[in-house]
Length: 502
Ligand SMILES: Nc1ncnc2c1ncn2[C@@H]1O[C@H](COP(=O)(O)OP(=O)(O)OP(=O)(O)O)[C@@H](O)[C@H]1O
Image (tube, rainbow, N blue to C red; front, side, top):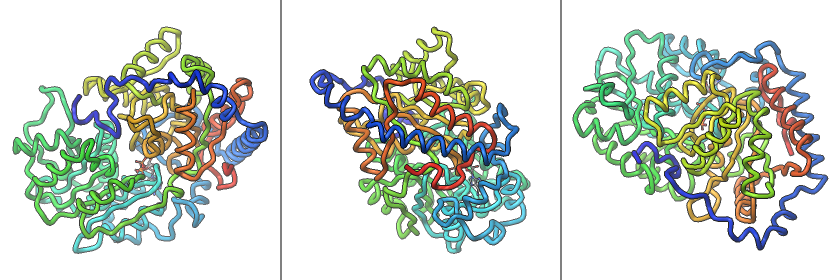
């Protein structure tokens, strides 16, 4: 397994957790997890309200058009303006981009992307990031709230365009995320004459550059470590280092060692910027050591979930029946785009083959594929050529495809010891509901272990998850369809907190 595969939890050849104890506890779990009628009725009411609000507020007319997410990707919307005017929303801000002291070329890039106002994290982080002398930052905000633009704008503002040397380096945990960030830099920096950006990610031998000389380098830690060691990357003028998904990057079980080695190859007094939606306690100390004396913007667990994402779970009668649920969900999954998260590469391949053999069209992306294959698959997903993607945790973080309206946790994320991994859960479901949009996540559970896991996740974030009825598929389908369809009917922004409050 290459280092770039190690996103949050390795997806390599592990078997799914054994559910042998299920037979004994089946009745309990089924009782405990089948939803009382009032919960289901409440869910139905909420989803009807949400769907109605979406349809009422929809501008209409863009159904079927799918744009690459890093291109011109934000539709101007009155609904978004409403969210950005709500002090309780993570997209709220009182300032404008104009007030941040950015150059005209950078501002043109921002407005070309149709960003009208900063989000909360952008409003709070940017003045601190841009201040001189540069200060380190550890920044946390909910998934899909615009952290990328915050660190990209800081880098663009700090580049000396006349110095043809790498000056800023971004590390991301997967090649897909590194390529996405590179795309954002290119679009945002398109009016800065002479700006160059280069990816340092695993490539087939014949495509590998001999040297990395662009102003901004975006890469995965293993490759960056390698090119720095081979002196193919001149590091002496690098003055900004960004770790996106920083908690994952500093995790000592994963990419931590490589990130530390990259850091050691850079000049001592550089600005270090760490961003993520999650900073679990065990990583905080590492983060503070990695980015000393940083300005810190953090959130409580309870503030982390995005309220535009309707979180559901379905108690399946058997492990095998989870597959049947996928088949039933297929029609809903193709209204927008969907990601099905599984635990292992083997499961991903097995489900892909079975669904395709049965006449459904699905794609699959895991760390087992060749780099060029991975690029083709994610690009097909971004442009809507592939609408349903089965993936391991390799895609759980950072991927921004605005058409994703449904995330399915076929297997719940676990920490390898049979316990839930709330952080990975949060990142996975955060692939939908981006920047004020609505989305649905459905976790398929079976047996007491996964029931306990979903309870632990719900307790961790202080949220109530909604159980779908497991004996009335027509009703489940109608409920989900209304939300997803309305989200494709026009601009799929949520229209206020009450739409989706439980
Ligand atoms: N100020 C803004 N106005 C409108 N749209 C924005 C703004 N800032 C960012 N966006 C859009 O919001 C989406 C989510 O942004 P981004 O991918 O940076 O989120 P994130 O906070 O990094 O999420 P994650 O934690 O999942 O990585 C992107 O499509 C981006 O173009």
